[in-house]
Amino acid sequence: MAPSKSPRSAEEYSRKSKSPAAAKTVDKEKDSAGITVTVNVDSAVPVHDAESFAEALLRKEAVVSMDNDALEAIAQGFSKDECVVKKLVVAGTDDYHIEDSGELLGEFLSSLSDIESLQTVVFSGHVFHSLTLPAALPESITTLVFDNCSVDEVTPEEGACPGLTTLVFQKVRDLSTLDFPEHCLQAVTRLSISRCSVTAVTFEDAAMLEGEELEIAGCKYLESVTLGRDCFSKGEALYMSRNTSLISLAFGENAFQKASTWKLALSELRSLTFGGSNFIDMEDVDFTAMPELTEIVCGEGCFHSGLTLICEDLTKLRRLELGDFCFEKGRKIYLINCGNLRQLRFGKKCFRAIDDEELTLCDLPKLEALAIGDSSFSKLDRFVLLKCQALKEVTIGKGALKECEYFVLLSYLNRVHVEESGDTVQFLPEEYPGLPQEADITCQKYCFRVEGCSRLATLSIGKGAMPRTKHLEVSFLKRLKNFELPEGLFEDCETFVMTDNPKMTELHIPEGCFPSLKYMSIQDLPGLQDLEIEDNVMANGGFVIMRNLYPTTISVSLNSLLCTASSYKSIPNKLRKCCIKNLTPFQKKIASDAFLGQSLVGSISVLGVVAIIIVFLV
Image (cartoon, rainbow, N blue to C red; front, top):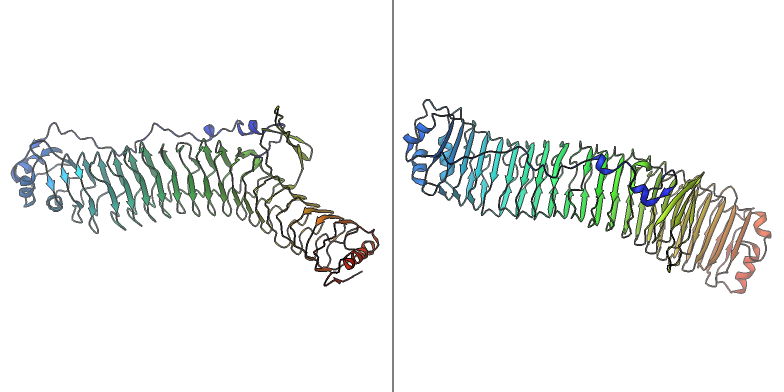
């Protein structure tokens, strides 16, 4: 969560008036894409030969029934004079139905050529052991429907159905997988799969390249849907609902690239993956209608124009990963009641328009990895998480959080109240009878503070990140081993405190970091072996405290630690090399506990150090 700018509790802040319900509402009842074909077989007229079939085609809507013998006879040819039929329904009955193993359907459809008025063909109640979508489908036929049929497999021929724009499978049984090969059905713009027996639907790369609308609904055995690269790249709308076994949905790169809306109500969906550049024009992205989600992974450029991201009551969500340029124009994030989240990663240039009043991150007590990519959250002024007891890794990219005033990661167990006064924000944990009282913590404006996250092992900050930081504190991190800083970071920082991080073995402050530092405190790092401070660190003078350190190597470079006062205790008995430059006249004269003074040389000599290099540059 982010602390508010007026006194209120953290929990109250997460329930502020900008509710996700107001930002975006999903109509869970709406599950139809409008691709509906009504079939009435009660009025079916039996046809036995080509002549009776030709007679039926004299009406604009013909409903006929036939068997294999009639189908073969019709395929040989029939009179098409005066045919005006627009919609042809071939219905199966108990006495008349088709049972095809792969050739009859194609021959029959080819025989319908030259009927320019014919637009829609429906097959209802037939058996297709191998349903082949033919390349020779007459170009006048724009809609093809298979209703209440038994189908073992569907095989589109190369270049199949060149004029077909709408393809519908409804109530198809016995079909386990539905695969659309690469580059197939290029002209189809609308596809509906409803109440079918399929367990998997797969679109290979560039299948249905011109697709605009996809509906998959009521397929209770469906477990996975995969769309390859460029499928439905011109897609405008996606409708999925009542697929009660669907657990995996994956979009390849550029699939539904231009879509600006969806209707997704998938109660059992676990995995949702976007390959890249999907739904780039969608403004409000709401995953609330998918309560069983465990992972959401978005590739580069997904939801590029998205303004709002809503994840509410996703209690099983473990991974939320947004690639580079996702939600670049984003202004609002709601992560509410997502307490099982383990990984939260933002790529480059995500949510560049968001500020803290539009950021709601509630308690994430199981969060293990937090990554903020380069130049992300460039206008955000506060990023605060108060329950980080499981956090293991924090990475902040180059130029991220440019306007950030408060970056705070703490590890409270109890409910916390937030109070603000002037240039400070105070975190006040509630008291509970019989439980240890947690400490109040006060953060100054322009602070970077990470404290008490007992599992945090890696903390990495990129160049140019959080340039407004004036106070940096990294303390009480029992497992911290890697603290990574680039050159020239935190040019305006005034205080640097590192305390009680027992697993740290190396502390390296690169050139140009903390040049304006006025106060440095490095204490209680018993595992520290190498302490290296490069050029221009605390270049303008200040106060230094170093206590309870036991390094084997200390290196302080040119123009660094030009302090006016200092304190050093617990001379290391393992010290093997001490390379010290730029001692001020004041440093040389300080008392026996002084840091980097001549008395330190005497103390080291008593310990019988192997090599000592002291360079005085006065």
